[in-house]
Image (cartoon, rainbow, N blue to C red; front, side):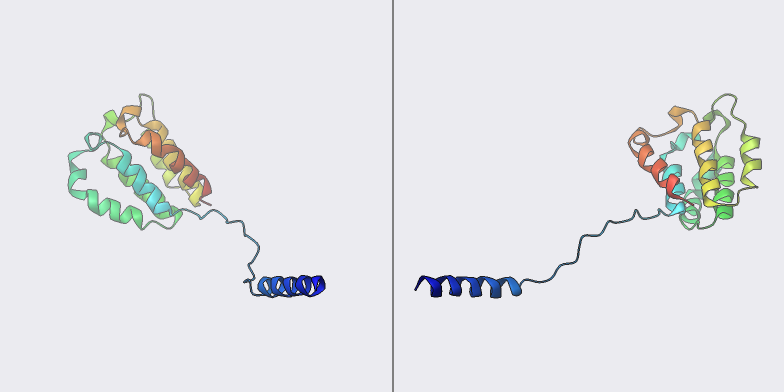
Length: 149
């Protein structure tokens, strides 16, 4: 009798186990490469409105729309050059060479190079040129730039 009870228990347990769905082994997700244009737009939106020339007010939405569409290194560098043109001279740190940045923009060949260019621009702006929220956003933004190739 005990044998039949154990056999029934074993067969029932095995049958139940056989009905469980097969699951694949967990996969390690690779980090998604961020959109270069969204990083440029995020950076632009982090700059306080008072740091822009009056001409930017009328071009802001057009500029941000174009920035979000950036997909190539050349377009990224062009947008950075345009952005620099919209910034007041007082937005930059003393001694920052804007002309050097603009010349470098003309030689950018890769998105990694363009990321370095915008990183340089960020370092050339006075800390008070940015919104208070930029301190929290900056680390994620820099990580996103590091993923651009």
